[in-house]
Amino acid sequence: MRLDAKSVELIREVVLSEAGDQARVRLFGSRTDNQARGGDVDLLLEMPQAPANAALLASAVAGRLSRALHGRRVDVLIDAPGLRRLPIHEVALRQGVLL
View 1: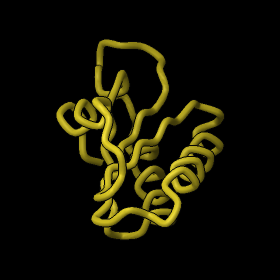
View 2: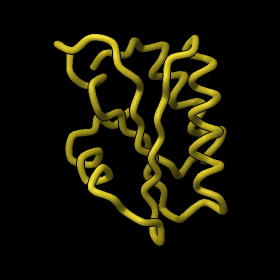
View 3: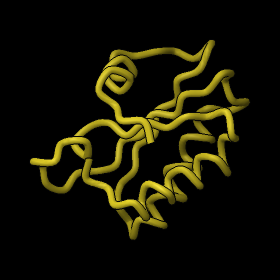
View 4: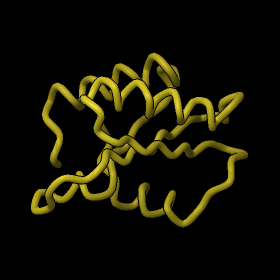
């Protein structure tokens, strides 16, 4: 995994603040490959129930983290009951690293 401990803790703090203590977060994509270089931060938020506004939550988490990570691009997916699940959600669940 190509994130330092400080970045992992920052991600956890932002997710807790924005999504609540029931949310779990997984890192997936190129940042899980130690041989890769660069790349954005891809996150999957797993929630026991759908947020009131999933798009707003995803953009709030991505925006806060992007600023805190000095402009690094952050993409956020949300997996919760009642929300549409796409193939990328399956990839994130299968290959993602729980933070």
